[in-house]
Every structure is written in structure tokens, then in C-alpha cells.
Image 1 (tube, rainbow, N blue to C red):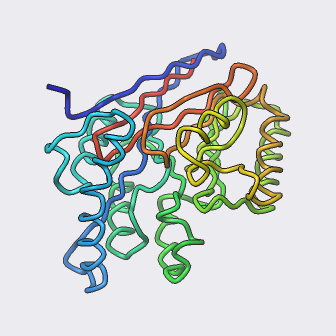
Image 2 (tube, one colour):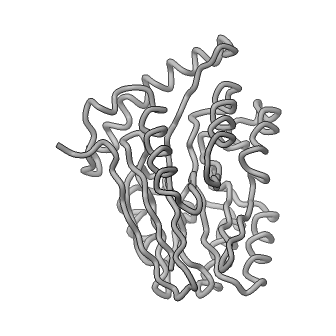
Length: 282
């Protein structure tokens, strides 16, 4: 029988002074309830659970990944098991690469804020399409509560001794001038960066393979995307020697391919089926 937690492992060697260890979690699609949940929250809780009960199995079947009745419960169960595992391993940080919550509701924001507060090691968080401000603009006031989890939802940075982790909200496959300038400024510092976003980029060999495998909905950088999207991707291509890796989610399967100069873009499958990824950079 397969293990409940399905842990992928990736090693990246770039000649650092020491080894850095991260744990990536993506697409948990949690909908939470608590004693203060509103009627709308309760409706959302039922809708989300019913939807992902089926969809997680559909994704797993499509991509040949393991999923059985043990994952039929609340989406928070595999997520919390993975968080417990990560804390036991004492990683340098946990990376949430989007869609940790299924929609922005007060109950959901309270849940992830509490997880962040109680966690023993740092959490690096970027937003996905299910929690993007562009999608959930009517809940915009709730994003003030997210500032305890992520300083700047649009683009943020987390500095380590030998490189910087940068995050971008590209859940709706849009890129702003602010995000492009933020990326350019990171490259101007002439340091290595690890890029974290939700929707993977159509870039290098990864891009063409991903389009064939997943379709244009799941990849940012198609012909129909904005000029800013292509500027953003072009900025990465022009500075590929400074990129350690791109980490993404969204596609609900494990996938990786080169984006140029030996650098890879990697997607990690859904927490809904107990999937997480250990990333070692050394």
C-alpha cells in the first residue's frame, strides 16, 4: 500500500557554502469553519468539499498519481499532516505556492493566519488563482488579515545568506508594472534568486511540453496573454544565469523541465493527495 504522505525530493547544486532545505506545499484548497463562521462561509465550506472530493481524484487519474479513499476527508487533514512532517524535518522554510485556501472567506483567512502564527519555522507564501485579489476583489478588506502571512501579496522577497526567494501573485495570469520592476531590481543586485509563483511559465522546454500536457489555461505566457506577461518572462530569460529554479503549482501534478542554461521549472502536485516536495539547494 502507498504511503499517505507522498514526498518528492529535488536537489539543486550551485556551489553554495552550505545546504538549504525547503518544503513546498501547493493546491491544498482548504475551506475552514469555526465558531464565528458566517452562513456564507458554511455554504462555501460545503461547496468546496464536494467539488474537491471529485476533482482531486480526476486530477490523480489523469496524471497517474496515487489517490485512494484515505484522502476522502476534509482537505485540511493532508495539509496538516504535511505541515507536521515539515516541522519535524526542521526545514529552513516551508513554501506555499498558491491555492492553500479555496476562496477568500473570513474563516479561511483566520485558519491560515493561525497556522502561520503557530508554525515553528518560516512560511513563504504566494497567492494562487483561488485566493487572488483579482478573483476575490469583493473580499478585499480581508486581505489586510493576510499581511500577517505575506507582507506584499503582489510580490515579496525572503532573504537568505546566499540567495533570495521571490514570490509573485500570478494566479490570474496577469503581471503588473510593479511586479516587473520588482523582478528587475532583484536581478540588478547580482545575486541568485529562487522564483516562486502559482501558474507555471511558458518558458524554454518546460513551456512547450506543459502546453501539450496541460493546455493553455494552466500556463502563463500564451499568445493571448498580455504584453506585461511576456516582458516578465523575457526578464527571466535575460537573467537566467541568476535563477536557481522556478517553483510553481496549479497543474495538480509533479512536472519539471529545463527553462534554459540547465535551470528547471518544477511544479508540485496537490496537498489534497498528501503530496509535498523537499527541495535541497547546495
